[in-house]
Length: 149
Length: 369
Image 1 (cartoon, rainbow over the protein chains, first blue to last red):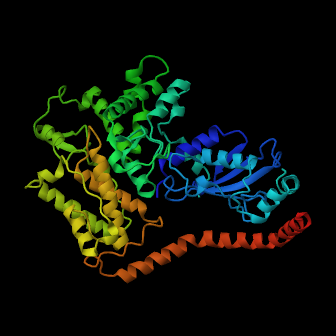
Image 2 (image 1 turned 135 degrees about the horizontal axis):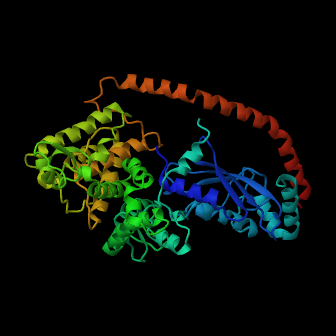
Image 3 (image 1 turned 135 degrees about the vertical axis):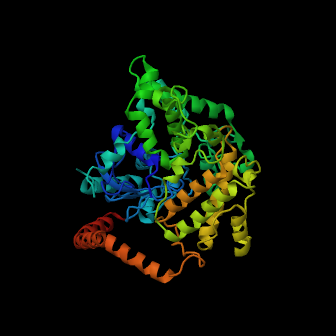
């Protein structure tokens, strides 16, 4: 199926004018598949980390949301071992007026503001709720171990 | 795979706010574009909250979620209001922007019409989008009025000599060109190119639809071809029997082939396209034009997961089984390379994995209370 013009436009803008701390590049052989990196936001336990993600635009995009997954290990209550992300706009709160760029910015914001009340990785969320300081220490360690360049 | 795939695609000439350097022009340009499809509004609709979208885009969206894509205020089809002022503004802007984009200085009109890159580029992609087709048509109409060779007023033309229709590009006898331009046959050029040989059976069926049309068009069915005024009601497909579904399709002169899901998808899309077309204040498409678009859409769906491998209609297909097996073979052949690459990748990944997950597990164990 031909690539919708919207996807071409979005790609053009992502490449030409990337959001701060975010890069997204389409695969040469599949323009619906993107290699993404997100820098850990300053002031968060993920600071100085560079996280790799994969993003896929399904056939129904923009009527259904992109599929996004962390490839880099991350200690975060809303991101599980497999890299799956618990974020409402990636599920039932998706709207076709959202874009790849807004999705990636939301993920970056999720790194700044973990939400242990709506957990995906229950053990991490428990850790965050019971002893936030210690949990953040682990997050920092993981960032250093897995997400440093 | 071509390595410069991305570059080729990104180099395509697609109207985009980034065509402008000035921020205020960028904003203006963006404000004329639908946030769902990213193209200029086509038959814009305002919702109760005031946000605007292409009629077809928002109709497709509310099938999934009955709310405004921008502000999430709940909405239904009853809230739709056509927006002729915006539609006019968009079509005026589409014409004006080319002149602004193409002219670095002031000699804009000539630069726009005679400039080699823009009008050609837009007519190249005209097939895929009605919006694009419209602007390309407009461009060619303007070119026609300037280039002396295609202007009938400047050349002595015999009534029998062929001239190119400025709207659809077909060759038509000079003496009937006016009747042709007003008639239903005009405006179908972009569709006639899209004869995709993807599925021979559905092609036969579709061509029967179109074949029947052209022969009947001259007799009595004029009411059907132009000026569709009544909106089509929505159908609850869950409670509609197969037989009724076929009747619904054939009452719209659409093919009835395919399985139930295909038929439902076809009819649902048709109702959306039909009603969205009525939201245009000017330039409504003819029904045959819409049918061509529906076919193009259906062919585009093949290969996506919705394209439930069209089991060909029994009256058309003679060897349904054989065609299936051919499909399988070609698929296997074409994906063999990809498949073996993936297998190889997985092997490497599983080799690397145990070590890293061990580290992780130890990490968790040490740190958990």
